[in-house]
Image 1 (cartoon, rainbow, N blue to C red):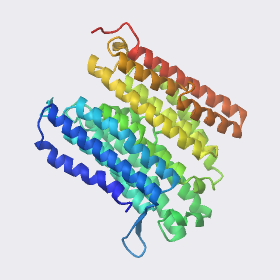
Image 2 (cartoon, one colour; image 1 turned 120 degrees about the vertical axis):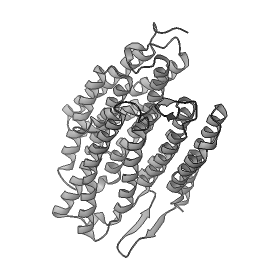
Image 3 (cartoon, helix red, strand yellow; image 1 turned 90 degrees about the horizontal axis):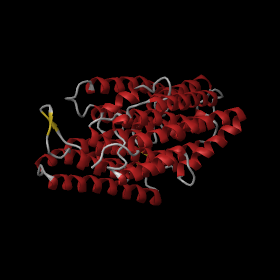
Image 4 (cartoon, one colour; image 1 turned 30 degrees about the horizontal axis):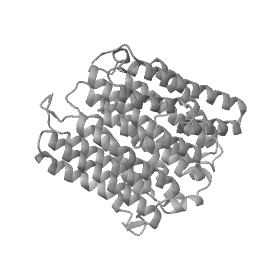
Length: 431
């Protein structure tokens, strides 16, 4: 039964793409597209909710040695619920704010292809987080990579978009090799691709397995030195950036670290490597965000930095804290990306110096203010508590580490304030 969760959005995406082109090319068509997209994401959420309470599972025997399987753990349940929750408002934004590019120009037709791809992205991510073996995981991993490439290159007529999509694809593909290495090590050590057998791994095979997972996860979650691909991904439409950074592509890396934390932490070198990667990325991403003048690239640097904090928490031995910060960050970052997209529609630029739209868009400014305060870690908003827990987790390793993590948190407060003041401060355009 659990197969229905990823299959529903994946198959529905094909239907939307095939049937949607016949819908009216006006507001009625956009309304139908919105209803279809939201209905699918809500139905996916309902299926996930039922699966959690009913303890659904799913297996498909490919051969005597290869069995595709899905399961619901506490970690996968959190991700499986967050993905459609984030996707629903993003699809609404897409249907009403984006257009279908045709022959090098934008038309008024609803963005059927974009919504279909976003819906497929949801299905691919659901398959990834529910996978209970490496073959299923690799299938989903490849689907997520393919969807992200297609989404980044969606506006392919624009100069540089195909190049940027290829760059993001190739960098993450290099990291993906690590997952194949990890799967091979798991099979060599246990005779199976199932996650359930990973406890049998030991010796050099365990080291190879952990190294492969770290490589794949670090590349996917844009940790140093892989962070630059996130900036190339900003060539995609705003809804793509919102979904990719909040709950799908980038989230796949930290999901893998949290999901397989017991096996990863069995190797002594994992903790210092994860902490070093996370801390370096948090500081580097924070500094870049503080200096960035492009709204979406500022938020991209912020995403890299915040996932760095999640890596640090996992490396310190607190994967649950990383999971909580993922949830708070997902809702915060999705809202900020959509706000940046609305601002760009009014000034035809993502340059922060061209915005200051607080007077023109007071409602959007207020919503962005709440999200910015959350990103900055202001009490009582949710991210304040998850960041405090990350500092505490770092303190269990060393006091100096907690101090540096607090500095990284201070950088997030600085760039969140900078984004809000430049994008939605007063003194800009007037109605």
